[in-house]
Length: 188
Image 1 (cartoon, one colour):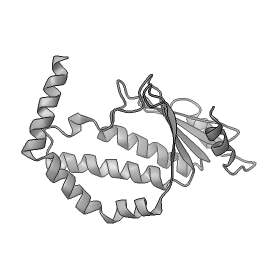
Image 2 (cartoon, rainbow, N blue to C red; image 1 turned 135 degrees about the vertical axis):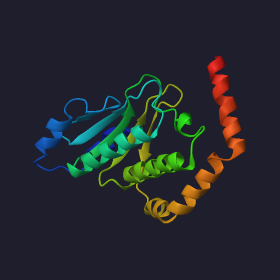
Image 3 (cartoon, rainbow, N blue to C red; image 1 turned 180 degrees about the vertical axis):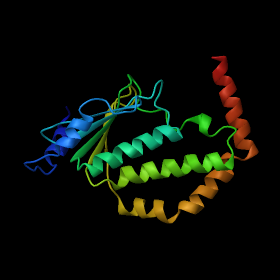
Image 4 (cartoon, helix red, strand yellow; image 1 turned 120 degrees about the vertical axis):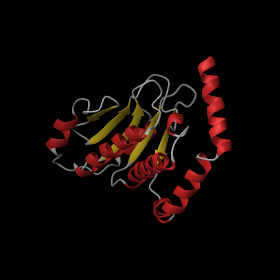
């Protein structure tokens, strides 16, 4: 464990009692096969492992699972979060391109709304969180910091942001580019 991570975890306030329900609920993998959650009984720090094979690509369902997991950890009073990957050599490939290609404005609205909700949940949790990036090229520890300005920006510009994304992603030029990219992947 890195010195930074050790210092971060030691800074988490300690209390005598930790909710037993949280330890019991998350002592093994959660209900989703895409996420595994464990909680350290002594520290109350939850480790959330993303394991949506093959590359942890973020689709609507996976984002909802992440958001629900964070909400449950907050409700159960987790004291900290380590977000990492359960897959070797990859943290996440990012957004699932299949959510963007040949999408309707309605399906894209659903996807983007879920992405924003998950991002906001991660930024606004009441406990400290860190991401342990375990991919070969990016083997480092990244601290996720709560920023009021980011949270208020996400909330205030929700409709404008959504319209811009839907207009851009559903434009013929972007759809053509996504289609060509997907075809090139099939040739490999």
